[in-house]
Length: 284
Ligand code: AMP
Image (tube, rainbow, N blue to C red; front, side):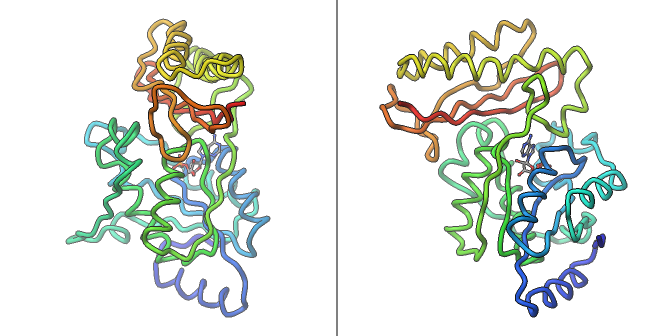
């Protein structure tokens, strides 16, 4: 496996791969890899000949009060993990390579980008879309794999690929969880042991709400109340949002309809750590 930091080196390599009519998959990450990331790499390897994993903590997708500077980083560890999962190349550029002085081009996303994460983290999806466009242009992948863990991000990238005519096939991989149900995340490293155990409340609450929906609850306000009340069993949890919406569009009707696919979306703080999770539900 090769570690690349230079755009021109990447271009040389991808040119040769394409000349051999091989397919390239990209797995974009911010590093500090865990089994969630590794499942994306495994999936990428099944779908393409060569797998690039980008490891880049993208400064422009963090708000001024967010955790950019303390975000966990360990490239040596990531290199070993990515290699063991089947990655062929790691692209780990510096900020100077990605955003040289005088950098001034950004991609604004509308529609679903204004809700939930977009509302709570202004500028976040602009930063995500911009870095993903840059990675697409640098690596020229045929396939890109994202995780359902960041459900709204998947919707935005899917739309952005279509809106901007990127010639990339997108795949979404399922959420990988800890044994207690907590969705794996690099940010879980911020949690104390107690918080990590308590964080199982998020998946438990998603499951409880799913059960209520399966029993026939279709009223959105009631579904949201069940989700929030279940989360509040954990004293001290701070809910950023805990809501249901129509999958795909994130619309918020008064009542959902039989046959509709919906999504439960949660963002909550345990101590200072912000965790997100979601569950897709097909209404009977
Ligand atoms: P991140 O490094 O957090 O930006 O995540 C990089 C990619 O890994 C994104 O597509 C995430 O959705 C995906 N991902 C993160 N956590 C998980 C997880 N627990 N299961 C599956 N995919 C994940």
